[in-house]
Amino acid sequence: MEPNFWHNRWQTNQTGWHESSVNPLLIAHFPSLNLPPGKRVFVPFCGKSLDLGWLLSQGYTVAGAELSELAVTQLFGQLGMKARILEIGKHKHFRGEKIDIFVGNLFDLSREILGLVDAVYDRAALVALPEAMRVQYTAHLKAITTFAPQLVIGYEYDQTMAPGPPFSVTPDELHRHYSDDYTLTPLARIDVPGGLKGKCPATEHVWRLDKRRSE
Ligand SMILES: C[S@@+](CC[C@H](N)C(=O)[O-])C[C@H]1O[C@@H](n2cnc3c(N)ncnc32)[C@H](O)[C@@H]1O
Image (cartoon, rainbow, N blue to C red; front, side, top):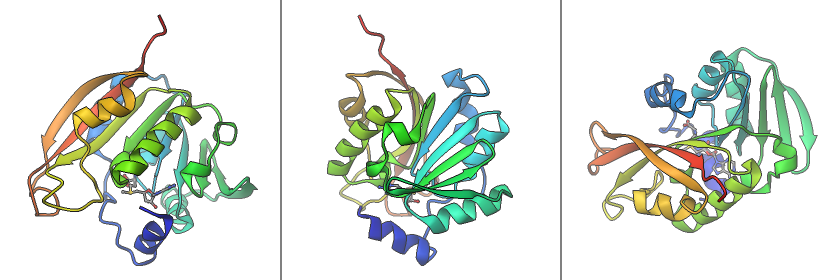
């Protein structure tokens, strides 16, 4: 999906992926990463997700990347924070207390600008992209986070029954992207009530990715 697709979604308020409460799978499964408070969690494609406020409330520092400035302005409003806005490379850097959001294209974000990352929370980021872009996304994410552990929440369904986004990402595909560098642990599989937008049955899945130890 190209940037204009997403800008248009935000401008026309078609943000069906946005949840009105913190994702219960985050609350249930983030502790499995065993990440002590004070560590920095990166949320690629963060939107204005309430999950960022939950991560802050758990004592983490949060970094996010999002194309839409509209989304990020709303996010800071929700958090009750006033952002300091700086220009950095191709990004606008929205800074608040313990939170940095980089507004712009994730594929332009470097490891140097992002800074140290202790864990990644990917909810509806990998599955937001068509297959060819998913290859690019996973390679870039690994590079800019230096293989930080991840909690990944996505969907599986019969891709012939509905177009994405969200796209279906099977366990096989997840392994193709990540198993050279990570050990993948499935944490949960849940039937999506009503299926995918009422079109077909769908499963929401949760995975933990831990960097493989070097031999
Ligand atoms: C499906 S939404 C998920 C948002 C959020 N993770 C949530 O759970 O509410 C995908 C988000 O990624 C953003 N996005 C898409 N492509 C992007 C890119 N290349 N760089 C940065 N953000 C991107 C979109 O603007 C959109 O807000």
